[in-house]
Length: 139
Image (cartoon, rainbow, N blue to C red; front, side, top):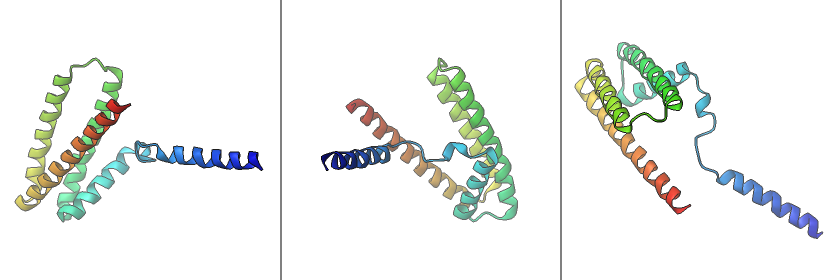
């Protein structure tokens, strides 16, 4: 009876430990480039109430962004020694270029809404990074 009880506790403990693990959402990395673009365009169409022409132009822009992001990710894996300030400058330059393209595609109201959503997303990312750093320091 004791062995059965200990085995049950062990199974419950292992299950709880496995579920406690944080990290990426399951299956997120398994999306293809096209699926990532589709999700991004659908979300922007819903949030910004885009028309068909705008959605198709956003799709082209989003495809370029996703491909660049994946290329950058591959480069970073290959060269982790790259200067951080250089990477930040490149990201800011790319962000400005995307902003200029979005301004051409969207109406003024849609662009303002897009900027607000983007800023909120940046804040969430900063909070997540701050939380991760705190967790790292406590370990």
